[in-house]
Amino acid sequence: MKKIFPWVVVLLSISLIGIIFIQYNWIKNAVDLREKQYETKMVSALDQIRSEIVNNVHQSHEGKSNQTFNLQQNAWQSFFGNLSTTSMIPVHIRYSNKEIENIIQQNLDQQGFDIPFDYAILNILPYNMAQLELYSDHYYAAYKDSANHKQFKTPLIPKNSKINVMMNSSFEMLNIIVPTDNYITTILSSLKWIITGSILFTLIIIAAFALTIFVMLRQKKLSDIKSDFINNMTHEFKTPIATISLAVDAIGNEKVLHKKDKLLYFADMIKAENKRMLRQVETILQSALLEKEDIKLNLEKIDAQDILSNTVHNMELRIQSKGGVIETAFEAENTEILADEVHISNILSNLMDNAVKYSKENLLINIETSNTKKHLVITIADNGIGMSKETLAHIFEKFYRAHTGNLHNVKGFGLGLSYVKAVITAHKGKIKVDSTLNKGSQFQLFIPLA
Image (tube, rainbow, N blue to C red; front, side):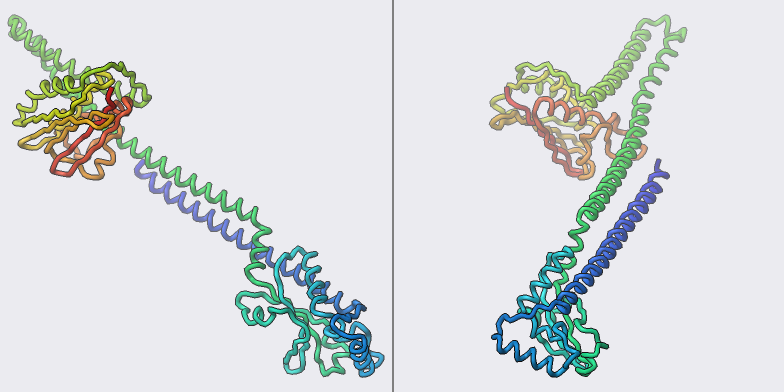
């Protein structure tokens, strides 16, 4: 597992990066293709606009008197004679600004371009000089802001036409300017479902990748926990089994068979070690109940201070044998709780047992009680080895034990605190832990009052 895991992560990462890269390029190519299609449609719109302006025989009188219009038309036709037709009369003579704007708007709408635009009819003179004939109100500003605008141009009269030859190669040019942002937005809007779907499925793939890595890390952690559990269980059962084996061999000895006191001694030893193994089996079975969240509580009104006093009394001899001291300060006025006496007694024993197991020289355990409005607070503090922040984050996890290498100076399966947490939660209470490495730990139990 340890060897395969890095390779799986690397391969999945490469696959994910490849998929994201392919998706990005696919979307980019789709946008580029759609942009070319829109440019083609814009060119088509320009051709239609040009055709309508050039070939339309309509003559505008908007803003001009009949006399003025007739004079302009007669002057143009008398100068060019038979070459001149209505379509060859300059646009600014035949159309008004409003009419040109309407023609452009109608043709852009037909091609599906719902975007703002500015325009100009330019008379392109020799030596690339240009003269504005008709133009929109904001044409100058749009033309100058070329970085944020896109231009589309088309000549209204071909350069090589006879009329352009007679006019020294000048010709009229239609220039339409659209904002780049609106143009790109129109393109992206046409691809919104494709882009949204692509991004959505890419995010799903990323989420699946993250979930896979999380599950693999969890499986690796569970594998490590299982290995530690097997090692701890082997160590815990090895000692009583060895003791029972020696006791059985001793009982079989002829010298012991005839001594009743020796037989009773070894029988008691076997019985004690058998009880010890039974407790270990019950601890493991208890963990199975925790896994199923199947803790059955026999709730009744009990005085928590009585249970606490009994537990302290039972632990005193063990604490004194280690040269330790236990101090109590029972200050709670209301100690009646609705709880399961057996489970409450067990979790108090577990916490005190941990204080003894993880103690240093001159062990000191402080036990206090107090009240909040709705809870009885039991505080168990010690001056033991304490816990690091990393250990604190995992102490309530099943089978978790602080890393001590191959040392087994502190015995157990790492089930005690997970059991404490489960019991307190089942009683609708809570537990708080405060610990400093090499200074000690403090556990606070908040149990609802009856």
